[in-house]
Figure (cartoon, rainbow, N blue to C red):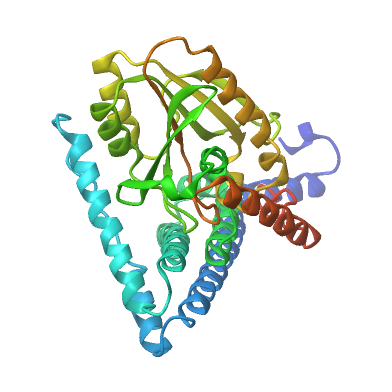
Length: 398
């Protein structure tokens, strides 16, 4: 029977035995290789989390006299979570989410003030964002570690392959979150802040800015001879503001002819960072609370909604802002001015600058200072290879 394979019977027997051994042992060899690679990922995630914690504690040390107690409090707070509300009956789900987000925000504010009472309000806002990034890294590390331990216990090769295929994405996101945490702690503007930067560049007189909602500012002015209201989150600390509630309040008190939203949007591979696009609809990211409030009031009063988006990748949104993204500022400003000029309806035009205000102030002068900081930071970090493409290791062990 062996002669049909050709050659002498001994070599064919050895080949057949080798084939049988590979059928039996190759799955075990493969899962061992995958686990070895996954262990590396867990170790890297753990190192990034510890590094992020050190960045946060370095910031905290400037505002507390008891760093040891603050470190213990931070270790406990890394386990913080928010339970998603029940959605079997979707009626009222937006208000449920808003309530939980408000509770979460107030808890973060209280915690930041407790561990670093010596920091000012803007530094504590940046500290909150840094803590949020550290929590994300910590939870990502715990989740991956859980599956690695579970795979090692069960020797489930299907689950191992599924997790292993996610390694490139996990590595890219984790490194981006660490770099974002570093940006928040140092007060560097991030890619997601480009919408807020555009709004700030349109505010000529910062003394006329009023806080219309918690951490949310409104500025009444005239642009191209028309009444304009500009809304953005309060800076230069890292905040997102309550843009939806602010828009709702302004629309109820004023006759609004148009709403223009400006925000960073996810770019596709092949699109250039900082490329600009126009459209209609509410350009506000997140889980959808602010977007829902704007859509509700605009639909009820039949207010047109224009949007201008600046394309960034998922990693670029949370990393220090690239110069390519900053360079879109003049183009977006011109599109906003053109939109205002072409508006022939009576009423005020509402401009909403969406994005994280870390490092971005509340006036044209502060926007210019932020732009200078972005360029300096970009050059400094580029020399360190900070903006090079994050290239994860290969599919299995290469």
